[in-house]
Length: 95
Image: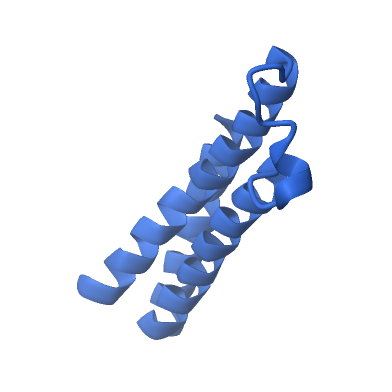
């Protein structure tokens, strides 16, 4: 939940920055880049892209704690990215 709140705060800050500077393109770019960074961060740190060596850990013999930690990293990245991507869409279409 912490990452969702941080994502909401950064999305609001990017929209406020666009509002005060009257440059909605900049708000779109800031929120979009933060959203993409959140997705890439979640995927990289979850261990999904480790290659053949990392695939050995993703089996049924993997410990529950390791699996839960990997899933939490992926979820946290997406929870951070979701409000920023929605803010980027709002800055693109509404404003």
